[in-house]
Amino acid sequence: MSGNRTFTMIKPHAVLANQIGAITQMIEAGGFRIVAMKKTKLSASQAGKFYEVHKERPFYGELCEMMSDGPIIPMVLEKDNAVEDFRALIGSTDPAQAADGTIRKAFALSKSENAIHGSDSDENAAIESAFFFAVTDQY
Ligand code: GTP
Ligand code: MG
Image: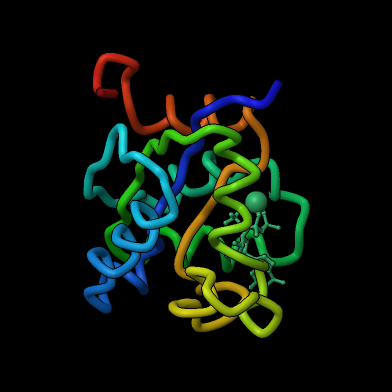
């Protein structure tokens, strides 16, 4: 059975565009409870560590630069079937292919600056949550 938690981050361009409120409103309206949330900033090396799974991909350098370019909002979210349902709420990686009503359709600027991250498995959701939050930070 799939788990009830996932991990997300609002990406720097969306934070700098004052879209935190609009995006968290869509997250809550989508039935997710925000379990943990903070504003922080990744160094280039922290971004490199977070996205280590992508280190062989051609866009890895650009991705790490973009993610360390400004503040981010990491969050742990709770809902039944959280990982899959949240991927549906954020939409396709490329905003040109994101469905109407998704967060990326509304706020992504490009395939790189696509507003928000969503974990792709229960296992990665747990690893990514632990990158930013202690278990005791979660309510
Ligand atoms: P995340 O939820 O952020 O993990 O996105 P995703 O699962 O939809 O995509 P993926 O894990 O394949 O890629 C991780 C991130 O790398 C994306 O969200 C983009 O920010 C960036 N990215 C993906 N593909 C490209 C690309 O072709 N070019 C560039 N510049 N960035 C990309
Ligand atoms: Mg991904």
